[in-house]
Length: 269
Image (cartoon, rainbow, N blue to C red; front, side, top):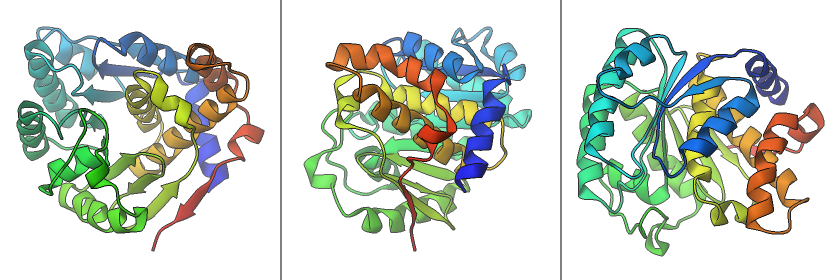
């Protein structure tokens, strides 16, 4: 498995694939730099009058509900429709749907009308969108939502089957499932929680991997391993959140097969 995922990293490195990212302005610069470090090309177009044209010439589309506003909501609807019409893979990051009824309602509309390769969120966000009780603490997981990963995996697999896509539940242990297979990824570091936008970066990195494979579960796995192993490498040379943040892009850019071999992935039942 690791060889297959590493081959996707090598494909991406020289792809120059255009990734259309409609993400929030808080993390826009970091998202663009993360995509560049991996060898793809980001474009952050979000004006409703140009977004469809941009999407049509892209290899993948990343949507993000963070820092929600009217213009981006219109652009996301238009770009999603364009991507679906043209067979372009789409990932959505359900930022804040556990604490905002506005975002939750909008996300439900997109999920009902559109098709997605990957749906990403934390445990509280995915509980909210699945109709379960959610105790989100803002955009973070609420203590009342924490449960054993194996327990979460069961209903996440059901949710993946319902939407015919891959679910990427990010957290201390990432849970990835396409409804048939389940994987648990145990890489990363708590330092990631001290930098704004790491979840957003994972979202666009997954979009970049979607541009080189039709297998959405492989794309999600490759994204989690690439980003979280880079974070581990950055922590080993950082003095704190600032130097960790700066070194993330160096670690993404310079990752080699030996780094990738440190992946901690296990199959679920």
